[in-house]
Image (cartoon, rainbow, N blue to C red; front, side, top):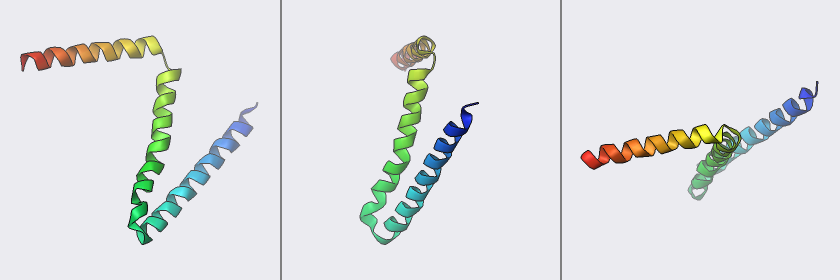
Length: 80
């Protein structure tokens, strides 16, 4: 019920992204100046998914966990 459109769009995006990755690998094997673009092609979706996880998750719980982690890091580094 309404999922076919989402699945089709997601599958299409993944197919295009894989084609871009293969094309970039092929181009960068011939031209070394294009190698950084391979890494950018990998970082863009990673940054997007991290953004989705941070903004659409439970913000209060995430923020409190990060605060506790930072406080723990500061305390352990102060004694070392």
